[in-house]
Length: 305
Image (cartoon, rainbow, N blue to C red; front, side, top):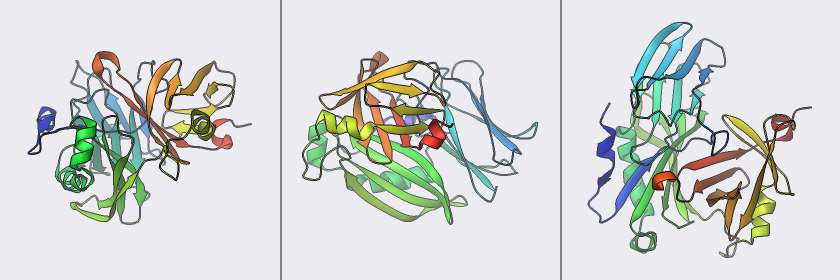
């Protein structure tokens, strides 16, 4: 695997690109992340992170009790949550791994089954193609407003006929408007991006370009949400139920000056649509800003009878 440090670099333009992979939210921003073993729908395969010494974790793919692939990851002991996307035909698994800092690159693998051949690792042909498309979203005005910082986030979003769907988010520091590169890749030909499009959005603004009121944002947040590791029910009195039953401790939330507060900790709202809620920690420990994603869910999933 290529050294992740080389991906934190100056490009020909006078601005710095930070590259991360956005996949999910941990159980709570303050909770420690816990390694999981995730099994395929048919139960034949599993994916897990096996810890070694710091910065020597391995991504392990197994068939039954036998290991078919073991890949070192650049993620230190503070980052361990990951998401798996199994192809419907059982031939591939795509893996996203969340980073807890922005010093490395994207974290997305594609592994062939049952051979265990690693078809895609971070910072390869797919990423290079996506960087070119991201250039179309970046202009001098945004660079000036953002203070020179541009963040790229790669996420696998699911399998469909023709390959793996992905999204590259491009956003600039302190600017809500950002763009997306969506497309499909065939695992055996990662240089070929199909059905791709570039779109620009300001998800938290109203139709006339004005920022919504705090009460409008709060109203949009109400309802059921989920991440790959947890489920949530946000209700109007400032409570958030975490877990699949309401017998767990509720957490507090509110919106003030356009920011989302969770247990009094402020977060920038990156995206808020009918289907997706993305929020980013402001400041963070050591200046590291972690990003979290929730997907709209249903009562049946979050609060079963």
